[in-house]
Every structure is written in structure tokens, then in C-alpha cells.
Image (cartoon, rainbow, N blue to C red; front, side, top):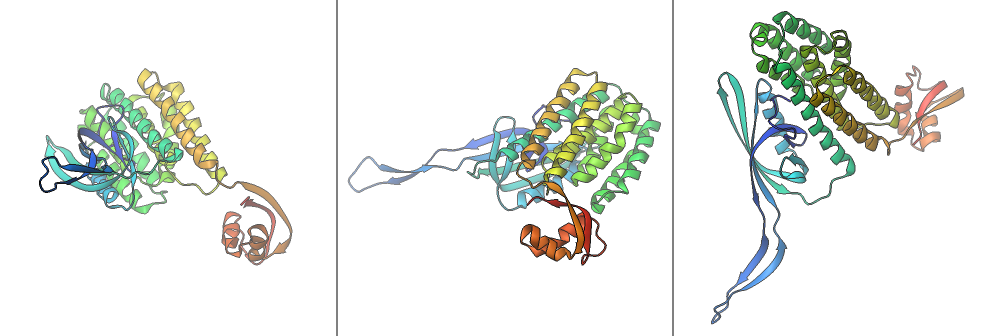
Length: 364
């Protein structure tokens, strides 16, 4: 989250968070009115219910506001329907008919205001989509709790600088280079502004949480959370480390719950790793609201990933005694020689024309 939410259920459009301010609704019946000569009373022909429309106003604050602005614009320009989660509307399937964006600076803080026009899409959500959106809402609750805890304590400029330097090193291993560059820039800003952030706890909370908005690759978010876990444990959940680690972990969990996996094994490995991190973090958290939010998020993410995994093929061991071309093996296993690349890549085979030994292949 780039801004500090004002409620435990901020609004989300296509997984992008914003603070809901106002909502207007439009509905009714599609009526065709017939007026005939010499008749005082018209006749109304009912053509069915009108499509429901919603006009929403919202905003985001802080250093991450421009990044969320760009994501929101792309989300509204994307084809097809998407999930809209709102505190009073609930979860609906919608299309963005229009988006207006207004930007300003208030007291040195970036403010981006949105005005949306949504129309219902009419299709039903899958269970997996619902679980993924719930996980995103729970993640927002965790970031809120972390920001509140930190804002009442703060930390030194030295600690801010040290944590920023540590995370800059992690970004060098990111898969997404654009995300790595954006995250590097965020960490550089934190390092430069460490002195002022040390004296302004709410601004520091916003700056740190904004940095994770720039990371869009789920694996990169998990790498950040994994790198921060030892620091969090060693510091016994000091306010700054709790803010950074739990914000990174909640972002990683939300992204994992919304990610796409190719095998059951991959999905379950991610699920179990995140669940273990949540269990470890819960042992060190003493704030009741943060503790409850962590457990809620863990449950939502485990459910979302498990729902995704249940339909995926699994890996199984296969021993090939004599060398065989990968093309022939793929055809024997799947009736599709094009899957030879999959077998060679997964098993690090140097010679695709002579595959042999212990392998791991998909069941389907």
C-alpha cells in the first residue's frame, strides 16, 4: 500500500488499492414508453433491468501515488471485466467505462484523486478470483496495522539508511529489471531522506510501504520478504523492521495469491513457505490488531493458492535407463513432441538428443 488506509477494507480495482471517498449508484428498469393518439395514459414496455452503474471517487497519497496512478490507468484501459472490491459495494464484476485523474501536492505530499465510472459485467466470479481479492484486502489490513505501530514509535536515521542499503542489494537479483530499477530508486530516496523520515514517522511508513508498490513480480516480492526475515527475527520485531518486513510479506502474499502457477508442486512450495513465514512472524508480534491481521491474511492466501493448485498437474519421478531423444520422450509421455523443451529445461539436460537418468516430469 502506498497510502495509509482509513479503513480495514480499502477499495481495489484489478488488485490495485485506493482509498474510497464517495460512491454513487444508478439502476432501474429499461422502459420503452409508447404514447398513442387520443389516449391520455402512455403504455410502458418493460425491456428488463438496466445495467448497474457506479460512480466512485477515491485517492492515494505519498511517494507511491504516481506508481499507483500509472497502474490504475493501465488497469482501466485493459480489455475485459475485472474484480472491483469496495467497502459498501462489496465484490462485483465490473468494467471501467471511464477514469478521470487529478494530481496535486498538499503539504509536500503527493495526492492523486480518481473518479471512476464502472458498469457491471454480469459474469460470475470463480472461487479462485474471490479468494485472491479477499487476500488483497487482508494484505491491506496488515499494512495498516504495521503503519499504525510504527507511527507511534519511529526509528533513527541510521537504521533507515542501513535497511535501505540492505534492500538495494537484494534488488540486484530481481527477475524484473524494470521493477528492480524502480525499487532501487525508492531505496535511494529513503537513504537520502533518512534524517527527515526519522523525525516524521507517518511519512516514513508511507515511504517504505510505497517502495513495495514498484515491485510487480511475485517472485521478486518473495525474495525481498525472505531477505528481510532474518533481520526481523534478530531485531525481535523492532518497529522499523516490523513495518518493513510485514509490509513486504503482505505484498508478497497478496501477489502469490493472485499469481499463476504451472504445477501443483510450485504452488504448494510457495504456499508453505509463506505460511511458515507468517507463523514465525506471529510469534514475535505483540500488537493484537497486527496479530489478527496476519492470521487472517495467512488463511486467505493459503486458501487462494490451494484453490489454484488443485487443478494443476503434479511432478513425478521418472527413471530413463537408456538415452532417448527428448522429442521421443515427450511424445511417449504426452503425445506432444513440442513438450520436449519443457522436459529438457526442467531437468537441466545438456543434450536434448540423449536424455537419460533420474528425471521429474509432469503427470499431464
